Image (cartoon, rainbow, N blue to C red; front, top):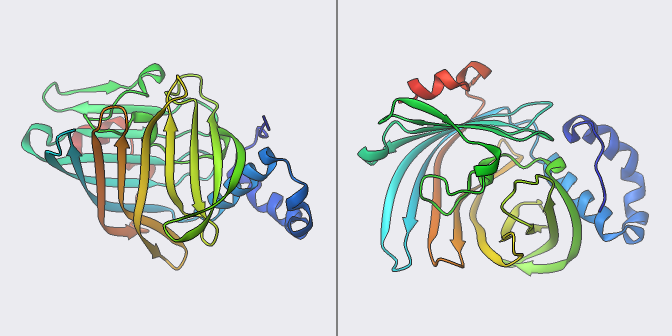
Length: 270
């Protein structure tokens, strides 16, 4: 598989793309599937750099195999990092039994991500170990490792084919996690050709069986550049359960700082 350089992709993106841009038109068909998959993934990341910080509200709808639903209301803050993965803080407001629960995540480019969960009933902060990141997040169909920012270096790649999805022409790229503790052997990702927005992701478990599918809907554009899905659903094919996330009230450039994302912020996040 194609290996990535040691320097962060965010640092290399501008220079690499400027150098390669004149060659793309003639070299695309000479690329290996691994090189093509990497190129597509770098372009997708490049188009989502520079948003700085965001705040949004989110509803999490848990659905069991029988179709019964339960609702949680959540606040989410995110902070972009120049030379590392992004930081995020997730705070549960409703229902009462999870109110005050907070989740802090530091995504990293090449190291294992740092994640902590604050449980108000116990009044303690629990660190999520690398070996437990494939476990379910707060009873949902999302794993802890699904809640980190996409960083190109976290995967090796292979372009599979072009395909139409949701009425859009799309690239289909296979991603292989470099983290030995990942719960997935691979992910298959559909990105539309025009905006490089993720339309669907298939997740394969450690036995290489299809485990889950994440579908994205209702994209809106912000600041004339950044696309955000307002509705996504993770469906577990092996259990019949699903989790839908519905976003609203996106705000960009709200002035968040590193000090808003530390273990002390977990305890005061109410």
